[in-house]
Length: 172
Image 1 (tube, rainbow, N blue to C red):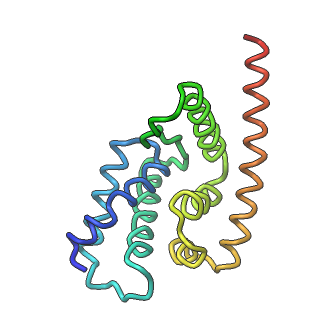
Image 2: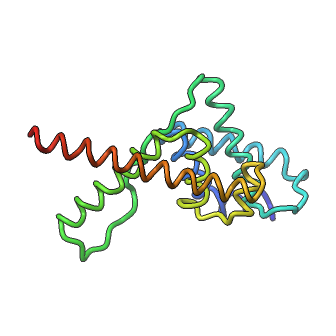
C-alpha cells in the first residue's frame, strides 16, 4: 500500500485511539499528523509481520508516549460523545446513554495507563488479542490477563462512580 492509501484507510481509527489517550482534539490531530509523518518516513521498513493497522497503531502509541514525556503527563481524559444517535431514541434514552458513556470514560481515566491501553485497544478499537499483543509488545497471555484485570478494575471504578453519583443526588 502507498502512504496515501494507508492514511485514507487508517487515519480516522488512529485519530480516535490518540484522542482516547490524550483527551484533546487539537493535540490528537497534531499527534495523528506526527504518526503519519513517521509512517511515511519508515514505510520501507514495514516487514509485513503484522497488519498495517497494528504497525501504525504501534507508531501512534509511541508518538503518544513521546508527547507525554515531553509534557511530563501520563493521564487519560474522557472522550466527548461524537457518535450520531438513532432517530428513534427518546430524549430520556439519549440522556441515559450519555450518562453511561460519561461514567465509562470517567472510570477508564482513573485506571493505570496499561489498563487504559489494553481496554482501548481490545474493547473500543476492537483489536484481536494477537494484534493487541503486537501493539503493546506483550505476550498473548499478558494481554489476556491484563484485559481481565483491567475489566475488574473498571467494574470497581464504575461502582465507586455510581455510589458518588447516588450520594450527590441525595444531597440535591
